Amino acid sequence: MKNISLLGSTGSIGTGTLDVIEKNSERFKVIALSAGRNVGLLKRQIERFKPRVAAVIDRDHADKLKDELGNSSGTEILSGMDGYREIASLDSVDMVVSAIVGAAGLLPTIAAVEAGKDVALANKETMVMAGSIVVEKAASRGVRILPVDSEHSAIFQCLAGHNRSDVKRIILTASGGPFRETPKEKLRGVTLEDALRHPNWEMGKKITIDSATMMNKALEIIEARWLFNLEVSRIDVLIHPQSIVHSMVEYKDGSVMAQLGIPDMRVPISYALSYPERLRMDETFLDLRKEGKLEFYSPDFDKFPALRLAYEAAEKGGSMPAVLNASNEVAVDAFIGGKIGFLDIAGVVEETMNLHKPVEEKSIPAIIEADRWGRDMAEKIIGRMDKQS
Image (tube, rainbow, N blue to C red):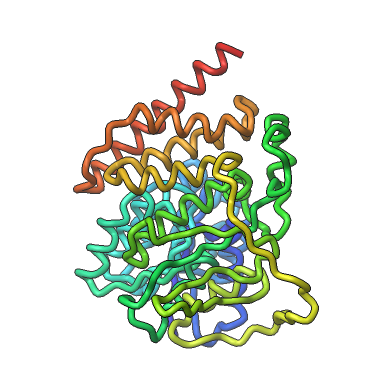
């Protein structure tokens, strides 16, 4: 029996993880759950899985959850970042699933690694912001970082049994999002509803908008650099609208290994939970005879500047990737709130990066400071844009 602590249980990855756990209850037990503000769903999850501990974003939400659960639940309720870090480092936990969206997942994931817990990682921002630190800490404590993102899980599987020295490059595939065929000149009028209409995947608002701008893929480039210890120049992106080939590895002899499957996040989730074994899935399997042709083409860096910004941030290194991520989170929130337009998201990120002088990422406090600086600067840029409009 593997004891699981799930960070971000009410998001799309979190609910998918609980689905996998419930169908394999003889192998996994939920010890702890955490959520942000979705107290209603978390309450139902607690009643169903009966974790020992749960955590929410602040004391007010904790009090609300306690009231709704009553005195008979038997689940200890914690709050805030201290609560998240505590459930990530419980002695009784074997694996932590890190599925909190955004920079908020960094400190709990670090806590899990420092406590010697294997991490099933869906929070790509942890590696974007502090990849070198996380990799070093994991190695020193014998911790396995098992990727949950479908692309990184695919690469992880394609590398199995091969010498890393034989790798020429890795190829991340991207659906292209809802605007892959939309001319750039028409993107200025994109609405929030348009951006949330992803053709292949069911995800939360922030990740769906990141997919629409291709910032999601941009962050995955930087994450892959640390997960697989490759120079960013050896990480490529191909648009693959069907989302059947989840990513590929090209070797120095010209061989290309690809991992294929239906677009269902429960597959990489289950592999991370059960590695090195595989769990049986009873859902629909891939039938290539019914899929038709599979297409691949190069992304448009002019139309989707987030990709260019990711390569630039990775090349400059230090605190720059943290600033890229922080400014993007602020810009996406502003777009959701109707303060800026769709094309302004990348514009805010680029201007923030241009104003930043990267410093070496020697510590988590330095990364947190870079994150704070990026957010403050992005807010100032958005405020100036609002006054000019």
